[in-house]
Length: 250
Image 1: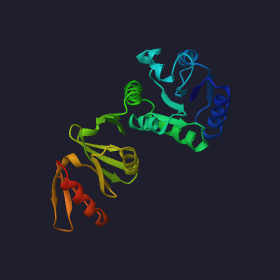
Image 2: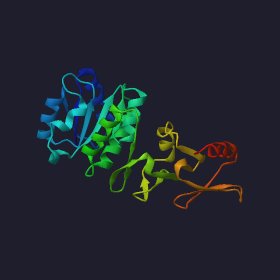
Image 3: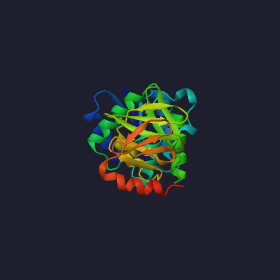
């Protein structure tokens, strides 16, 4: 398996090269480029499976990569390397694009490469990059990328009814696409949806969209019925808070 590192900083390329060699045995060849255009030429010549791509480079940003590559060459996974802020990291997570935060750590590299290999063959990279660009340009995030068995489904926040923990997976119930099993734990969604005020966690196994509450039932200790008729328990320590919230909805 081939990999390509595109970064204008020679030291950054060297460090990442060593980390990939030491932690990713499935990668047998590593190429390097110091700008986007020469990197694109190497992609066309060597057909790498994984491209490590710096965002902030002279002349062309890494985000412009698909401006220089034809659709039929979209047969690789991108892992961005970035020193961006926490706000930008949320954009990467929502668009299901992987990233390495500088300074890069060995465990990050191994995890990112393993995830990229799992996505190979069903990348939808053009769609995911388009969502990433939109998110980076607009702090008012509207969509999230949900990795599933068929690829990645992009869903509007307003179409998510609830999320339910299923071990290291999460069942996401939506108004349009039904239930989607996502290869991420519930905590991942709790963290990145923290700033979206319509989402609330009434129980450690559930994250709900308050817009889709159908009914609150007092009996049996109290529970919530959602618009899709699924029931959600409420932790004892959340009942008072939840009742305060729902009394102020509307």
